[in-house]
Length: 414
Image 1 (cartoon, rainbow, N blue to C red):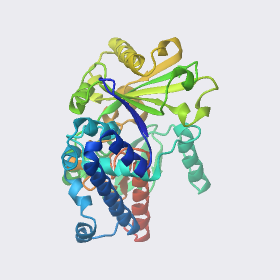
Image 2 (cartoon, helix red, strand yellow):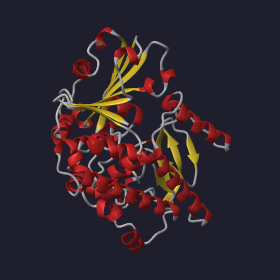
Image 3 (cartoon, helix red, strand yellow):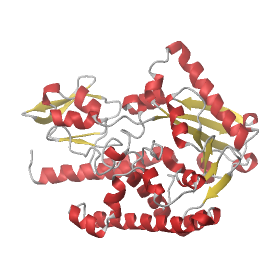
Image 4 (cartoon, rainbow, N blue to C red):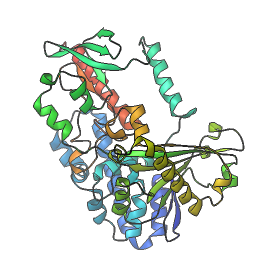
């Protein structure tokens, strides 16, 4: 599942699988056996609740959930730290079981407990996958399926405005002036830009504006992509994902995301472990990633940008050098870094946010912005809506929006 390294030399690998995961934590923390078992029972109960909601097609009453699946509402309104306090006392255990907090973008003291529990239980129940040919092949397959079903894809066709007539969607205008008339738009542009830059301002309801501006914008990423001229076995890279922590204090680590300094939390992902063809035989692709707030990079002058980027990338390589691969610099053939500005350039997300808005107690899946947009005929998809960031969650969010569109079309709501 993942390998974790801490500043005191603590180095442990956590396995996949519900039973294997539980047994490993009991082995590591036998004095917390009761709490670990009860925590896993709670996770199973949450999974049962999620599966129940899915089986009902999302049609259920709050009373049903409160009666049959009480853990769902119970953990939706508390932080992950609040939840852990109900089961554990050992701080090292809490740090280790919280290790994937970077996948959500908030430390346990701020994170919505439901988001983390759902993520963990999905991984343990169904595992994880990596697309052959990298993530681009996955996107390409979706485009091909779309075309085969009669869809038409226009590349390099940036939408500038959403056209409105009679208080509803009437089409789009591209940045080059081309106009396409339509009755519906499904926008994967973040809701703030969709509403504030692409729609006429007098058409956006005040209530909708309050919804999109209420949550805080989450972190972006800083990544270093490295090509190495040795196999991962030669380099001693023993896990697909290794989390390198220079502190047990997750709040302290989170605060480094607000500063241009070496991260205290980062992950080194060696994709060759799960997809050997990702690079030629005898080579390795290693990606180092931490989180950073996008605002941090907006004030860096153009003449300083590459200096700061290269410095932070070098500091991240040094962290790897001191922990999991002492001679890494001897094998580096190529290295390229991506900053929050890079993430912004390719996603057009505000501040390069990779998870959309923060998933705290007030902005979990049950309270997060839904797919119905600011005006009739407009639907929102992506990390900023429904279940938040990530492949599976955004895909499910897309299905929700598509289902909503088809239902509206069938009922002739336009």
